[in-house]
Length: 362
Image (cartoon, rainbow, N blue to C red; front, side):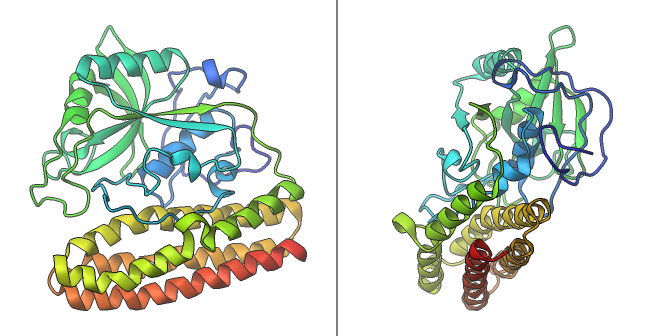
């Protein structure tokens, strides 16, 4: 299937069929109406990246260009929220997503259930697809239903006041698109998401009825070689350590991890598992973007660079899995994480060299 507004298709998995209950208006005015919604999914991405792909596609953009052309690595904040959609950029998501695009990403925090519903309904009326924060425990279509508490995101695509039910879209496996009673979604959005031991990674922080507003403030840039070359040079400079972020910050994090584990036990390892997911996802998206740009522009060294970036993405797996299984022997797990971390850092350096090489030679 061809992505709306995209010069080339983004691979999707045909999971859903039938019409989407929303027509592009407001900030999406002029976009081609979406008549079906195949589910895009990538194993390396969290619900945050997957949902953004769908919303950007609805807006007529090539989501792979928007999410994959920029490549950032943020310093890890002290407060690492235990939710699937944690991102080290915090509320400033636009500094990591749509870096070279006129894109606004804004979190809203309604005070109560009524305000939460009213804001979502108003957004839908304006052509916005709200991405809402939920606790999987209360959602009948999630495997965690009445079993595991975990902070998650899904999209609301419509609301029917006659039946008091929303239409929702959740592309994360097992994937669901269909109705959800208003009171069920409200319960999930207002949940305390208690840390009851059911999920060591994504429980302990309530959704607080948050929802993410995505606005396209202008046309998507044309992905010319001049535009891309400037973007890639900026990416390399950022990853090399602009303003305390980038590889120096990551290297310092791995250096400090054994001391943190000695002082706190397994808690820093659980944080490492969470912070690795956005970094892994964004490297994977950048790799896919480079491969597609190589095909479109006829520059084979971009494909080689994409492969090097893909190896970075997969190198995060060793870091995250070693951290995930560290509760029994935290010190040994920390040693393994640091070892995998050194491999990861070498992979980043190799990827940056490959990208720099691709800038000057076809």
